[in-house]
Amino acid sequence: MSTSPDSQTLKKGKSIDNAHGEHVEDFIDTVEISLTPAEDVSYGRGGVRGLFDSPFVGGAALLASLGGFSFGYDQGVISIINVMEQFHAVFPDAATPFGKGFMTGMLEFGAFLGCLFMPTLADKISRKRALTVVVAIFNIGAIMQTAAPSYGVLVAGRTIGGIGVGTLAMGSPIYISEIAPPNLRGTLLVLESISIVAGVVISFFITYGTRHMAGEVSFRLPLGLQMVCSTLLGIGIHFYPYSPRWLALVNRPQEALQSLTRLRRLPADDHRVQAEHRGIISEVEVQKIMQERNHPGKSFLALEFAGWCDLFSKKLWRRTAVAVGIAFFQQFSGINAFIYYAPTLFQSLGQSEEMSLIMSGVFNILQLVAVAACFFIIDKVGRR
Image (cartoon, rainbow, N blue to C red; front, side, top):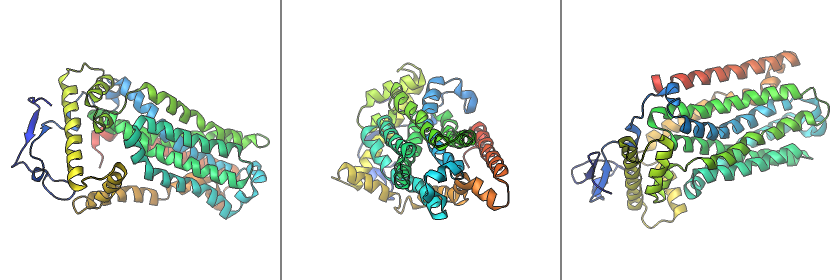
């Protein structure tokens, strides 16, 4: 890597700490790093207005966010199906409290399993290909749910579909964050949340409309429709570039630069593209050197496991606690219970069947309004 005004050499006397609280200079003799971190490069306006300046990357992020839509759809579709008489006539086990809860909860169990292996898969075969693989898993689960002849097959389909949505819900934000320009990263990541809630809302109103259909089509149709957006994602993502950061991770720096030029719609010699490219390459190189220093001679899978362990090291455990705490308490608020069981909960409070469905719909729309507000303000007021 050639020396430039935007780069410097890391030598003795400079202090950078790794995950174990050691100084990087203690084991790096000479590594060229960028003076301008990749996240500090500015490409113009932020927020929603900035999307008009970057339509290509906005389209890529919108397509990737269909993974979140599929997650939300799979969550929301079951709420009205759970109270359909046609559904209970075919699957009487799902009418019991345990059967209903077990069938619904297996989606979350599958999502938990999917979250565990998605990072390894995304690092190994790329973010794009990983999304295609998990779309296939999701669609297998959707087919099993749609065509299920018995309660057992339905539960198995929910579990496999859960693995798919868990990996989609993790893989899509990874891809979005790595292709987004720094000035739009927050806004584009909120697209994932908007898509999740939009999936919940749309699936709710689809089942609200199909509940009056006679026979099994009333619930099998909305279950089958969940494959539409996931399939669009699995096919469409291949028309967009690989993540520049992933290309850097697998020692393809020139392709990383080419990916950046496509994403930013700028020539390769543009100073902003060059600065971002140098920042990405430098960050990846320092990360690799620290991994080799802390975990010498380990295989790919062993390094992945070691990376998880590093999250609980003395240097990083506080950050890990904050990240896990935010996610935990967001779920602990009980939002998923309302998504899955809102009609049932409102009926238990004495509301009529029709009113319970209307109130559930209003609740879902309010979720969409709240997350849409975040979309417009996150890059103005900050994450906290």
